[in-house]
Amino acid sequence: MKCIIVDDEQLPAKILETLIKDQKKLELLGIFHEAMEAIKFLNEHQEVDLIFLDILMPGFSGFDFIKTIKSKPQIILISSDKNFAFKAFEFEEVVDYLNKPVQPERFKVAISRAEKNHRIRDKVIHSSRTNAETLENNKLCVNVNRRLVNLDINSIYAIEAKGDYILVKTDKENHVVYSTLKKIFQKLPSDKFIQVHRSFIVNFNEIIDIKDNSVLVKSDLIPVSRSHRTNLINKLNLL
Image: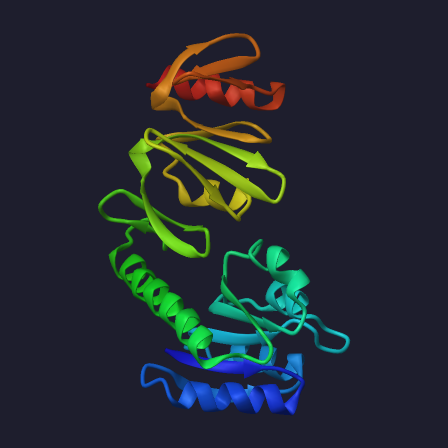
């Protein structure tokens, strides 16, 4: 994997450089002590697979950095403050969170996770037909608990927005995914899924009953907003 380091501090960056050089599967393309220099590099080099990103940088935090970059490589966040850990995983790109000073064994665990996700991403990219994250065998790739998981699209019957994350409901279990309803809706096949409310997407092949302001999907009674009801009725009439 090709990677870069973004850290305004010299010593932590040097430690990371040493750890990276000990990993045969990693290729360090550059070290950046200013966020804007790193952003410029990423805009010109789309081949970057992984970013080691410091959170606390003067004038431009690691979270600001993630929101700014156009390409979305995997990101391992690094900080001396443990209080940012929960917020870190609100971003789909973040695969791990390391505390300074970075310990070699913990670093290896993070790289192992990134490598696994990288292999899955490669499969997704090369086997996709209609969406960069939807596999030929009807799978949807999502970030669940800091790892990429392939879900059977046909097993998904509803998706609910829950604040900073979404709840993907399947026949077997529910999955907490740190994403937005809008993002995941763009990945789903339009011939199977429809948004019925600002907080709900349903698989309309699983709709059992429909009433004025709700639909019964499996055993879940899901609200239907006025703005989405017409589209739902039109979809059902086409079946």
